[in-house]
Image (tube, rainbow, N blue to C red):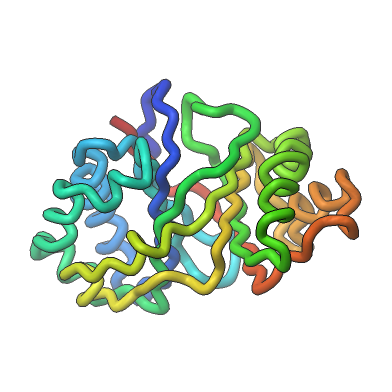
Length: 236
């Protein structure tokens, strides 16, 4: 797949992330739609900076689609709402082939590593979780944990997000078609990597835990860790 990503100095604190499987017989058509119509359309919306699609190294969900925005407020802007409520015919067709969709909007609360990489990372680890102690946990993960993770070999950037439930729960015409809603977890870590992560034991996560004495961390709950490789990216 083509990856198209020009340098940018924009610092993006908003994120929309969408995990989904796609009907096997529709995958090629889905990729064509997403590359040629959907991502370009979304990135053209004011405040949208980059769209990416990643594919699972193994297992499910098969695809992770993410959009970086200047702020989380962009994800409830009039321009974006207009697009969500007037999907194109091709979008309406494509969304009927989404299976087990989860769509969340997030606000970034911490970042470590390259703040504005020149190209989209070739690999990404997605870690969704809750915290047993949110107040203390946010401090630890936004500070020591992501700093430790960003220092690991082949890690380019680590971002920590917290879900924005009010925006994520907004009803739209697109949502009526795909049926996906917010996930169960309140936090998301994205670890961007230059080489494939070791899928068997989520090494990058366990190594970050160990680097700061994982037993002393507030406990992660409802944890879901997945790894993906880059299929397509486009920036303004």
